[in-house]
Image 1 (cartoon, one colour):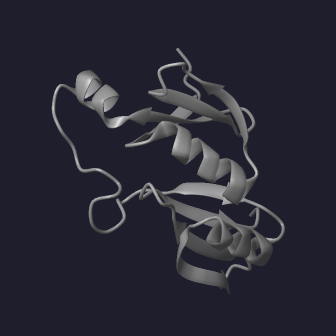
Image 2 (cartoon, rainbow, N blue to C red):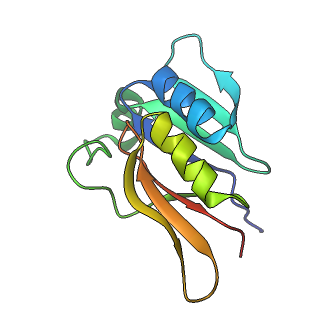
Length: 129
C-alpha cells in the first residue's frame, strides 16, 4: 500500500472569505465552493488546499478543538513558495494578513517570511529550496 499527500483542510468560520483572501493575497485559484458555503478548495498543484467550516470539523471529530483564530498561531503552517518573497509578503499584507516575520535570508540561503491570515492560519512564504 502506498500513500501520497492529497490535501490539507483548514477549519475556519467563513469559508468564502478565506478562499477570497487566499486568492487575493497569494494568487491561488478557486477550484470549488460548495453551494452551502461550508467547504471550498483552492488549486495548488498536485495537492489541494481546502477550507471547511468549524461545524464540519466538530461533526467529523465528534469533539471541539482549538481554532486557528483563537490566540497565538497553531503549531502548524501552510508553506507557499515563490521566487519573489518580498513582493508576495507585501501583497499578503495589502490583502489583510498580519505580518509576523518580514522576508529574511536564512543561513542555508532560503528567503522566508511569515504572515497570519485573517482566519488565523499561519503561512510561510519562502523561496524554493
